[in-house]
Image (tube, rainbow, N blue to C red; front, side):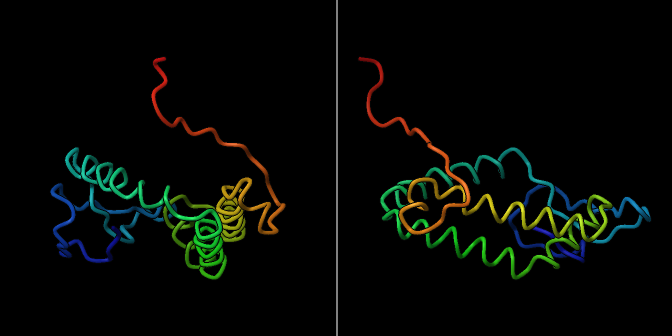
Length: 135
């Protein structure tokens, strides 16, 4: 959660808001919720709870979701890059290239499903353990 106002209280974080500093100027450009241990545990629990639904989703639907995510990153590349510039002090062109590179990983994550649906940019094989391994 990023806010331009340290007074914003969404109730998502129990720990205090911290300033996000621009390394070039030393000025606070936003404030971020500093997650406490229980916040991280809640995020992990939510991800574990959502995984069965994702796992049960057809490969073509998962592929479509990842393509939409990659497309959104490309559409918003300048806005995302500006966050990287403020946070890390990188030049804008380098930050935009980083966003596009990351968007490519969303499609490479499609693996074999992506190749079945016309995405040949990257291929990777992922193994998922299912069932009892202690035979």
